[in-house]
Length: 181
Image (cartoon, rainbow, N blue to C red; front, side, top):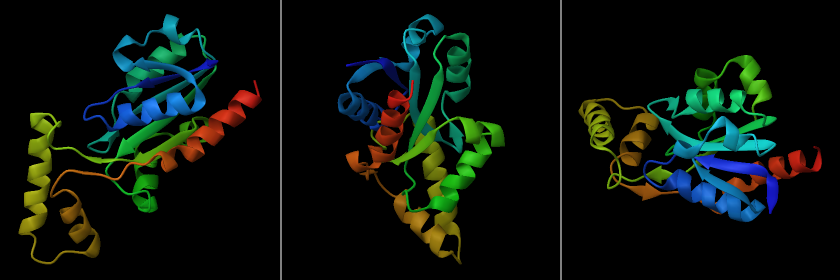
């Protein structure tokens, strides 16, 4: 087991938790829930991997997790974000990163996007309401772009597009970090 790495996750509908568990098993490291993360706990590790969801264009819990990390003795912060956007939508994902990070943060924080899906059954009521409102807004539109038609179909029902294969860039990056203390 790597006592140098901890994977901390914040999950609402289960996708991030599943990826965090897959990652912890694959690299044999410690797994922790976001609500239990403290500077003292993180100080036991060199590398902190934070997994969370994309939520309404933001990275859920990132601000608080960065504050906890900066108060710890851990030396490296790595981020993975799960979301319903397919990995192929690179322009959308790049825009998401630019919206959430400064140029310096983009350069210094290794960050990975892992496509996952939507689970209306486990979504909070406000989130379901927000998604239904977005779906209704698109549905009423007379002339839709191909992207809007694709978005309309994507949010029409629950689905899961997550896969262990999407962890490969993250696990390779962590292996490189472990090899270079």
